[in-house]
Length: 146
Image (tube, rainbow, N blue to C red; front, side, top):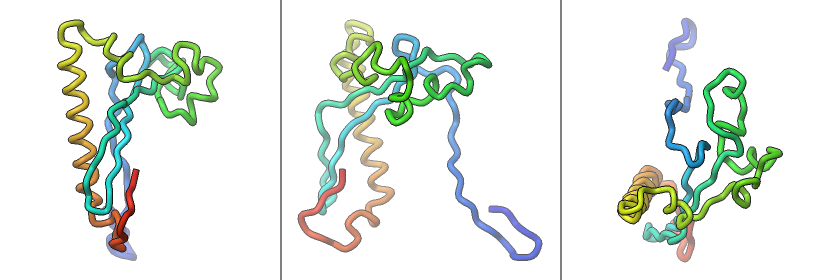
């Protein structure tokens, strides 16, 4: 909140996040993990068992020549699909959760995989709890959100 001299307090909304200078990488590239979740009118939560990973088209770097390159730092498909390197290493820059297992340490792969899945489910539940009163505010029956 900032105060202006004439009009009193004025509220502004901001998104604040920390950029990770040393992110986890797959084959030298940034990635994010996506999972499908469905919530019904009774706030029951369902998860699709197959989550996936979206990867950047370019190798990660904080060098001056790469710092403003959106193909290095952003993984959303709307941006990546315009790169000339899009889909060169994976179809659509997407990796299945099963292919991801290959990048985890052998004996610990399944344990790490399960921890990731559990944490994703926890985060979805926390996110939904923050907006539970805004979802289905008209109390409609037989509706859902994806």
